[in-house]
Image (cartoon, rainbow, N blue to C red; front, side, top):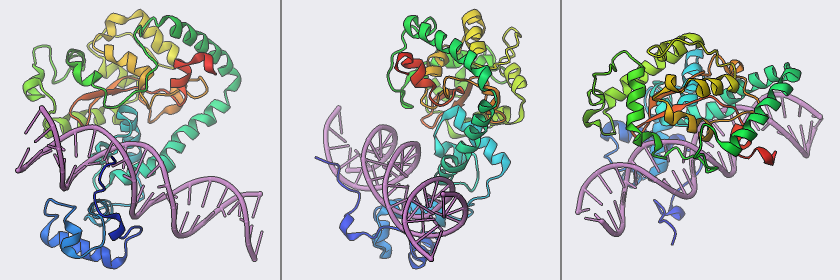
Length: 325
DNA sequence: AAAACGGTCAACCGCGACCGC
DNA sequence: GGCGGTCGCGGTTGACCGTTT
């Protein structure tokens, strides 16, 4: 048996909203609020619309102080940084951009920013084709080995990644270790409960906002190398330019102790659904200024934490199924 | 001139989460 | 704890419009 529809579809109008409908909805909500029940709202005001449709129209269009179009460079940067860090959590990204709606940002990303970002990358890749053939083959060889032996991710399974997987959320110890390594307010003696009441998720909104802000300040203001040094400052100060997967791989392989607290990252590097490698190449430099060259941590909308790492389109399949190419 | 194509964006859909009973 | 109703989210669709062929 299918799920019951939220409204009787035969009796509701669909498609674009008329000026009259907009005016009706807007004036009612401005005077009376939503009443906490979107489903009942259209009936109250005599609109032949689904409650969800009313909600959407209000949130995305009629609500005061909504901005449309004209995204600034700063907004671009925030969107890209957050997308790289947390993926397509549009509502969370929108929360960082006053006046922007999740729908707007999603559309903007899908139609413009994504192309801007990856188009730039392809352009650069195209100009370095010869060089990349060599690096591709080396990556491919490594991948084959990795897939056969899984030296770093022994339990890696070719299963689709789900953002709802509790892997990070449950890995409290790792998260805490990472937070401690981030330094600043998270000292070794601090209890995470100072920030996360009762050590249980979800964290309160203010803490989450503060964490976000710290994260955004960090990633939006720091040059790549500085970010790396800053966030990993409590670690031995070995420099990695992170110019590609080989460097990152090398870092993991030879410096396990230096990245203690990031254990949960490495698996995700290969499983995260936003992770990808275009045509077998990782050209992180080309992702600048938006790309983050390091694992970054932010709060997720369900109160946990997640990490993002930059890989390019197609990486997942190639890394999982190297023989299928 | 017109058909084909591609980009944009408002709106819809379906699912999981949440909440009250 | 189970259930039904509602909310919120992210993915997808389709109408519209500008550009290209």
